[in-house]
Image 1 (cartoon, rainbow, N blue to C red):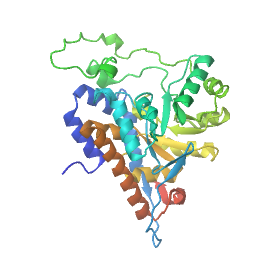
Image 2 (tube, helix red, strand yellow):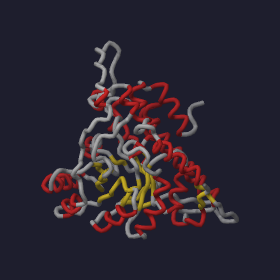
Image 3 (cartoon, rainbow, N blue to C red):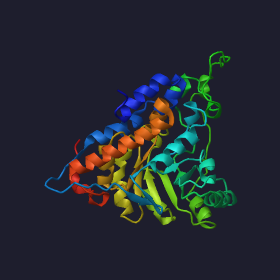
Image 4 (cartoon, rainbow, N blue to C red):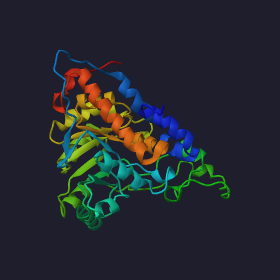
Length: 351
């Protein structure tokens, strides 16, 4: 029998993948406190089901940025796919198309969109250095058929990831794939460069949203919000949605787990725009918990990659199908017929 849940897909993927690739995807920053906090947070929240309700029919569908989708989960932007398989971005996009799942990615969708297939695609970015480039980028995404832009705000510098440092990871592998047998050995990394001071977008500010808004009305999701103050700023500056996220525990180690940050952000937003969340989702019940706290959906980062590492496109599809089935069952067992029935009355945090 093959894997029957996401965790077992990870076990299969780990056996098949190069250690360097597995560590890049599975690992977090430094001591990995935040990586663990994302999963541990789900164990602190408990569902309170209701019974004696007709749950013959369960509706898991939702609408996001004008697109009707069968489930309230979406594929999050993730780096390192080509460490698993060549042309992996397109492989994952094909799985998203097959399962009618929205996907957020910077690459791998051109061929599918050019063929006129109904892929729901959001483009991810870490920002642009000036107004002209921001407007140009937004217009290009609109022209290509993007339904939204996801702006990742928590990546001003490259984080310090011990697993990558230990493996002497070279970011050139992101395009070329993992090293092969017979490749010349790399020289030892200078210890002084272990915590590399590598800027990505250190000058990114809320002005970026103003720049895009000056030349485009494409919806913008701000991803990486943990503080209620940033949630309020996102609304003030014209964001259309927020994703509560700590980058999968891969940026600032010691940051709060996403699910634990979610309630305060939801309260700060006050229903003005949708709030989503990512980090640590592995089961259908996890999705119900996030929705009960106030999220409108979840983004999946590592889970699809474990399907990819285990069985390629079919593995990604199976992971998404499993989560959909688990979500539907968890809703039925909790006594809710549709997403609108899920609210905070059915969840309690237990320390």
